[in-house]
Image (tube, rainbow, N blue to C red; front, side):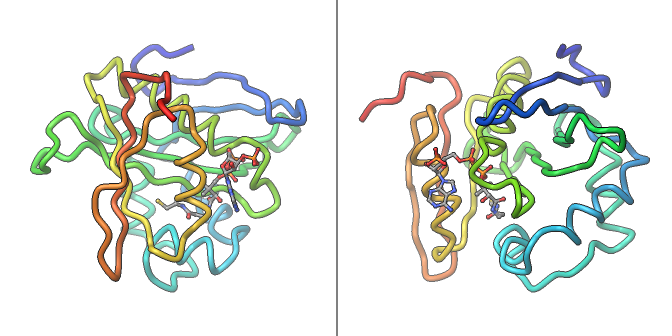
Length: 184
Ligand SMILES: CC(C)(COP(=O)(O)OP(=O)(O)OC[C@H]1O[C@@H](n2cnc3c(N)ncnc32)[C@H](O)[C@@H]1OP(=O)(O)O)[C@@H](O)C(=O)NCCC(=O)NCCS
């Protein structure tokens, strides 16, 4: 249940019924986050970080795990097995200087083996629920033009989407969190 703090933890189910745990990332999750990086393809890492990246540096690991759970929220999805095997991570970071004051930048990374199982939508829903309670009304996503997976994913989500900008290097899409009745 969402308590508005680092204790966030919930159970959910993939499309095939597999039970998963969705919980707040912790400072001691550095190794686990690095494991997710190792488990995803080079293409997925490229799409997520906009560069060829194999592993996260110590500084990046600190930045991605030692979060305030206020302006920076991150959730890990794990299997309900003995090891609680991590399979995905999602986060949003609010943009104080951005054009959209109530907006936050969204980023997702789902392990290859588990893509198309509904985890992207699970993360989006949990993050959206938290965001709305914190006054965030939209997510902003910066996506590589060739990343059709993420663009299709957002287009098929239940949230209204706007594709606002397309340059040769980035597509900017926004996700309206306040009206979930998607218009055609
Ligand atoms: C994009 C990403 C987050 C989607 O996560 P996911 O867990 O596979 O998404 P879901 O299973 O919830 O998919 C929901 C819907 O999105 C669409 N979708 C997702 N992946 C798709 C793909 N590869 N091709 C076409 N549509 C796709 C489909 O409509 C899908 O529903 P369906 O499987 O019933 O047809 C995942 O592919 C990923 O981590 N990619 C690499 C990292 C990345 O690009 N991150 C975004 C940077 S901002």
